[in-house]
Image (cartoon, rainbow, N blue to C red; front, side, top):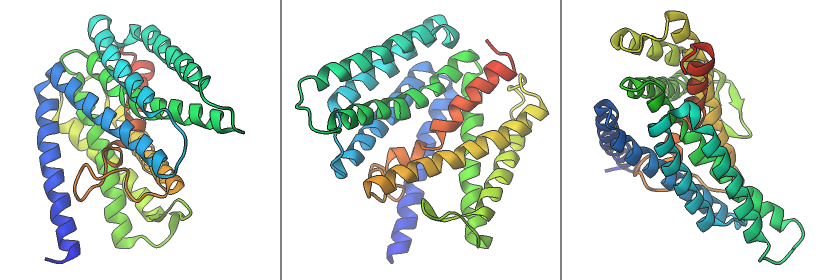
Amino acid sequence: MTGKALTFFSRLFSTVVLWTVSLAIILSGNPWGFLFLIFSLSMIGLWEFYTMLDHKKLPNFKIIGMLCGVVLILGSFYWCWKVGPGRSYDFELAVMLSFVLIVFARQMFEKMRDIRPLETMAFTLFGLFYVPWLFNFITKIVFLLPGQGHLYVLFCIVITKFSDMGAYLTGSMIGKHPLIPHISPKKTWEGFFGALAFSVGGACAYYALVPQIHRLLWPDVIVLGLLLGFAAIVGDLAESILKRSTDVKDSGNFLPGIGGTLDLIDSLLFTAPLLFFYLRIVVGIS
């Protein structure tokens, strides 16, 4: 078996297993299943982020960051479940403020060397905001619409993955004009517009097949297809910046043929918050 064939079958196996488990949990609507999925992906993704920093020898407080991530995910899940996502902000703000204080307190025990203290604190805190805080918006979507939130989460995932698929297929077949070559040489403008077209198509198909998301209207579906499709592209490029900055090809090797968990959820880190605030501000769900 050639190297390309081995990579293809590894990717196929990982994709099938991953999405079988994920879809089973999402469609079940079981909150404990969501907690397991969100907690596992966010914590592995955060560990991969700090590991990428270690690869480049960039200073960070990995253990403190991981512990703070655990508190954020578990505590936010509890508050969203008990009082709803609209009233969980005070808890999250208090937790993030505590994280800042803890990181500063930890830095006081390190020697002062040029800008290294600032780098250590900045890298540690950025990891918390970038992975668990952004990914936690999936929890907020789940509890924003009790009994239906899981369908909106799946709506977000469909648009996000259709965007990725559209970019790959269109870029592979007709891509000729580089999009941002200094970040990702293989991404093209053709792939960019293909991603938007696929994301809108995926959003419309899902809306037609799942009428339970009736809080949205057709104009909302089209707008969200464009907005989330664009956010998915930005999310993918954002992780590319991180990988280029730390000289790694993949964020990890947790998923054979795919890479790391962060490679899997990078786009969702941007699309989930955008969908949440659209539902809250534009659609008016509280």
